Length: 97
Image (cartoon, rainbow, N blue to C red; front, side, top):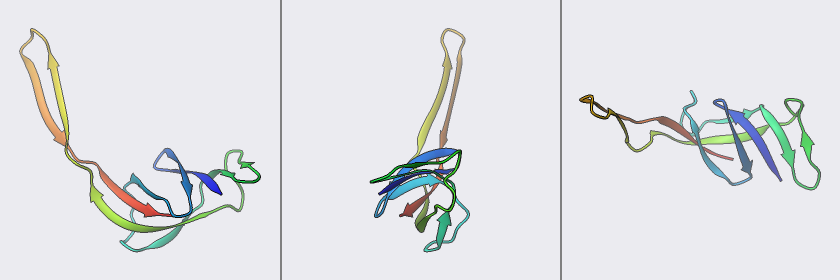
C-alpha cells in the first residue's frame, strides 16, 4: 500500500518503511505526527481525492533535521565583466514513514 502526500508545496510517494527528505518542518527530533494532506491512496484498490482523500492520514517520525550539502550559485554575463558567486545550503527534515 502506498500514498501520495503533499508537504511543502511538493508531492511525494510514500510506503511503510520509507525514509524521505522534505523541506524543513517545525517539529522536534523524534517527534511523531500525522500528515493529513493525502492526495491518493493506492494498493489493491485506489482512492483518488478531490483534492484530498477524506479520513486518510500518514504517521511519520522525524529522524533528522539538517542542511543539504553546499550548492554553488554562479551567475555570469559574457563579455560584460559581470560575475557573481554565492553558495547556498537548504534546510531539510528527514521523515520515516
